[in-house]
Image 1 (cartoon, rainbow, N blue to C red):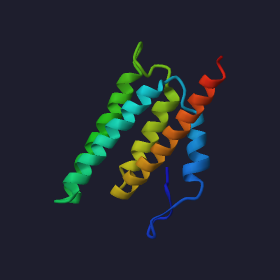
Image 2 (cartoon, rainbow, N blue to C red):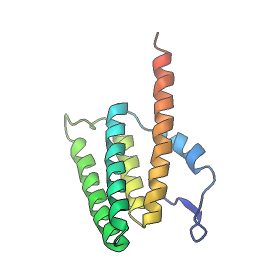
Image 3 (cartoon, one colour):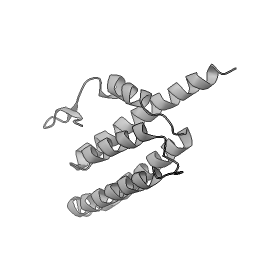
Image 4 (tube, rainbow, N blue to C red):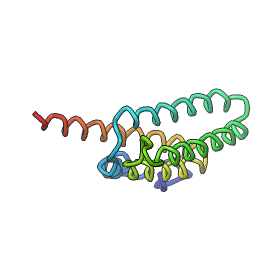
Length: 136
């Protein structure tokens, strides 16, 4: 996934946080909001650790971050096992794998990935709220 319209100018693509994030949120099914939130929180924790460690050596900090992102992909795969919490959430796992791969390219891509995932989560919550509102 490419986040940037102009990588050198650090200009993100138009529609990224609107059209594309909404479309990805629509394909996230088979997962509860608490599960989505847990994975998002784990990424926020990695982000905070990276930000702290990057102050002294950003190259080493990013290498550690990439390793942790790869470990998260393994956790996602494990969650899809038979009777696992993500066994019916292939759209979510696919999205997360795609985003993690994109976020591993550079610290800037990781930052854009986090912003994008935040937008997807917001649209997911909105969709979930609409679905619950119609169940009376």
